[in-house]
Length: 124
Image (cartoon, rainbow, N blue to C red; front, top):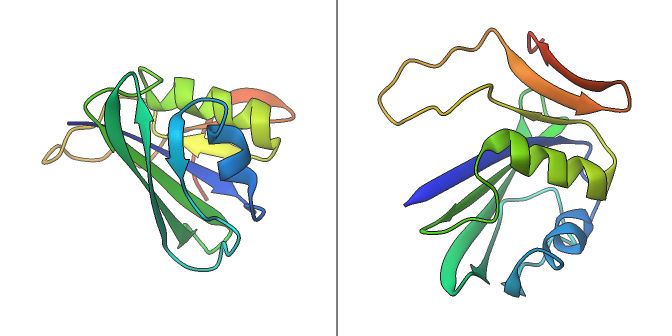
C-alpha cells in the first residue's frame, strides 16, 4: 500500500471534496465540518483508496490529509501538494522526500507551496 500526506493551512469546509471530486471516482467524503477527523473513500484507476483528514496538525492551523491505496493519482507528496494548491489556493506543506515507516524524520525542511511559489522551509 502507498500513501501520500500533505498539510493544508486554514482548510475551508468542502475544499478537499471540491478538489478530489475531479481527480477520483466514487468519492465518498463529507468535509463540511473541518473541526473533527474525517474519513472517506474513493476509487482511482480501479483501486479503492482511503482518505483521512486530521485537523489541528502543527499548531492547529493545518489539517493533515492522508491518502492510502494500492494506486494513487500522484507519484509523490509534492505532486499531490501541487495539485491541491491549484485547487484550494491556500498554503500547502509536505515532506521533502519519500519517508518510510521506521526511518528517522527530517523535520528541518518541508516544501511550502503558496502565493510566493514553492520553497523548502523550516516548519515553525
